[in-house]
Length: 390
Image (cartoon, rainbow, N blue to C red; front, side):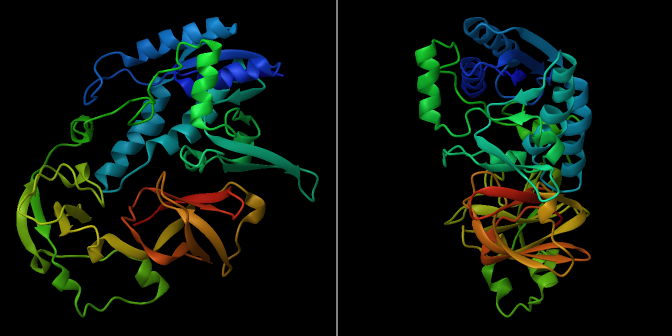
């Protein structure tokens, strides 16, 4: 079997490549460049060139062929343009999830197949297995990585069965310290390389500067909503009511500062507001894109930060396991996370004609439109996901 490893120059993909070679696969490396611009990035110029150099050295050390592909046009159209579009609507997208669905297991997969690959491997910390369904077809499963501190299954929450059929995750059952040690023992040049941060293939960015490439700055008011606002507030206890974020108006609070544009901020954000004079940190609790207003509340426990339920529109639901798709009116218990690294939360999924509702056992902090909610079975299998609608 011929396997293409997406070799990024990092330690995870390097060890994945090394293990595949050790296991006897016919392995070749493919390094993809997805970004050229440096505006808004915090790491300086041409970091990808250093990554490519390390990746080439690793491939040479392991003894596998090395190839290069430029997917920057696809990445801009299918990931970055989507980011700009979502931020313009006041939503907060997850480019890493989109990158896996649209690039690594689509555009990159096609480039690998053109070079003769049967499968594509990555350095994700997650596991995959398969079984034969009642109809005789193979069903693929994504499971949490064995390292609880590095589980990256969430980033793969939008993959399809077809994409999974071509995917391999060689380090999914290994913990990060062991991965580092394997790299050291094998003499791989990436052994001590720091993990990448920020936006997938773009790097760590100054988000407002990055977004100003397309979204113009526009000053507006920051309005504080005080806890007293919620006393006696009549919030509908219906499922629809619980899933809807509270709406605020200017009259509900007090102007305490200015911002440079609603589209540059996200629910739950603390840094970047430059607002002092409070005993506790101030957090964003709501964005009003139409009127260019940011609403904030003081303290981690501010009631405006918490919500009991969320909704996902029908067209934005992705079942990794289509055989487990819920029928309209059906209810089912799952474990859910609404952001990477969040501990799994107990919840009930409720399928309605107008979408999927997720009702949590405990109110969740910072439910953010545009982010992905992913649901898991008790054995760590990720079953499906969807974009939080509002």
